[in-house]
Every structure is written in C-alpha cells, then in structure tokens.
Length: 413
Image 1: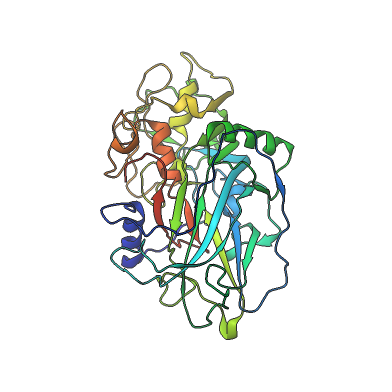
Image 2: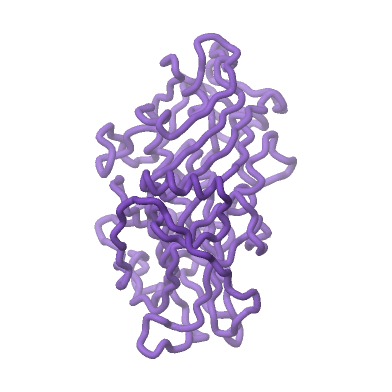
C-alpha cells in the first residue's frame, strides 16, 4: 500500500478529500434508494460471473488486499513496504463486512478536470447490493499480487442506453461504485453463519462497515526497543491483547476513479483492452485507513489510542474487548486513557522520519474541522475521526486509484 506520489496524484487526493465541496458531483440518474425499515436482512443466493472472459465486457471484482486476510504483522517483515502499526501492535481480522452497490460506468471521465466528480451520463450499471466478508479469501488473484478478490458482476453492454449498444473499444468510461448500509436483501457472496448474524446487527444500526479482530501488542520484540514521549507513563496498565468490534454508518460514493493501468498513469476512467478484450476493474478497499494517526494517505498506523480506553489503574492490565461505543466522546486531539491520563506517542521498530520525540498522543485531522457537535460541523470524537478516515478507503485497481469521494452521511466535507 506504500506508493510513490506524483504531483497530479497529490492533487487528485486533495480533490477526493474535498468532494461534495462548492461544486457538487453530478448525480447518478436512476439510482433510487429503496424504502428500508431496518428489519432483518433476507439473503439472496449469489452466482459469480463465469470465469471465461467475454470480449467487449468489463468484469468487476472486489478486494481488501492481503492485509484483510493476513492482517498487519509486527515486527514487520524485513524489507516489507506494507504499512504496520508503529506503536508495536499486530492486528488480525476475523470478519470485515461491507455492502457495495451501483457499479457504474459513465461517459467522459475528463469532462471537468477542475471538478472530476462531474462526468457524462451513466451508460451502464451493475446492481447488487452485494454483502461480502473481505476477511475471507476470494477465489481470484487481486491485482498487484495483493491478496485475493471476488468477482461480483460483468457488464457486456451499455444497459442504460436505448438498445443496449456495445461498449466502444476506443472510449474511456468513468468508473464508480457505492459503499451502502447493510441492505434488506443483499446477494450473499460468502457470509458464514457468524457473519450473517453480524450482518443483522449492521442492519439494526444502519452500519455500512463492520470489522471484528484482535490486536496483540508485540512491541517487546521490537528492534530497536520501543520508545515513548513520556518514559514515565506505565504502558503496563494498557492491555496487551485487545479484541475489537467496530461498526460505522459511512455510506459513500466513490466516483470517477483514477486508473494507473492507463497511460498516463494518473488518467481517469476504464477502457477495454486491445481488440476489445475484456477489462477487469477492481474495487480496492484499504482497511488500514481507520487507524491512521493523521487524515492523509499512508499516515502511520496506531492502536494505542484504542487500547488505552481499557487501561487499569495499576498494571498488569488483563485482556480486553473494545467496541465503537468505547471510542465515543474521546478527544482525538488529546487522547487519554481510561483513568484520564494523557497517553504519550509510542514508536517501535526502526526510527521513523519525523518521529515524535515530545508531546502527548494526538490524531491530526489535517484541517478537517473538529467540533463536539459532530455531523457537518466537524469531527466530534475518536469514533468520528476513524469513520471519516474509513470513508476514504475506496480505490480502483492496484495501488492508489483514488476516487472522488461523496459522503452520504452528515460529515464535514
């Protein structure tokens, strides 16, 4: 997930974080939210698209890359470029549930370079919704040799146009998709009984993302040893094994994504291959985003702010469980433990560029307003901050195929 950034990529990232600003993205005609009473979900049987490629078609796949199934190791493997938790935590996932819908191709991805959320009219759409547990391996190799993927749908023609004409072999189409709340009747791509029960909890809470896993502190294996900005703080009061379960209501549209498979690499849109060969388009979800210590791509990952919510007055702390409710009301810019003591920055492993050597743990919203009122007024607490970071996790293909982000819940834009 670590990448070299061009100036145009950085500008695209800025556009993604400020989507829904003064100029609103063009709405997708035809997408109508069905009435939803929040009742239990009824799962529909899912049949994956045939594996044989279809000339003139687009195949759409979904992945959360290798970290969803393998977790984040600590210490990180020697020479690895993947992100890791710099405060010494190893994280493994048991479930990572999402629902995606409205995979859409539209005309003219380059219609408005200054406002890339504006495209031409939609020409084709695959409609789910699809419920997927991305902590389980899919049957297909993901792009960039980053884990496994699930094939969700294939579009063979422009099904939103009269007569459903074939796709042009010489035309780029804007690509987008939606993360939606747990749906009343989703296609069950791969949910086991435990995941189905969790999905009903998602339904009851209106969550669009739910993750369950375990974080284990392994900083004692760090070379060099871990260090903190307050050597007097007793981290032995913080549990070393934390089971977590987080759900967020963050329905979001990912529009007109960049595609590094096109030339130049920062182009938007998708296109059929040579002679009309089928193109595989991957929806890539980066599950490290909620744990960033700053609201910017590839920020360091930290878990101490979460684990500290279960600290004890005197160590050693026992194993603990944390839910999203435990993070509500926590000041993201002045993180304290359960006893109200400021938590220091802790860094394990190799010395980091710009490593913190003083001060107490604070998460950086990078200019996004912070306001205890929450909603459009600003990020109100740690739970809200993590949700906002999560809303940026949708990409296209391998690497950083950044998309224009249109949040569909009350939030700062």
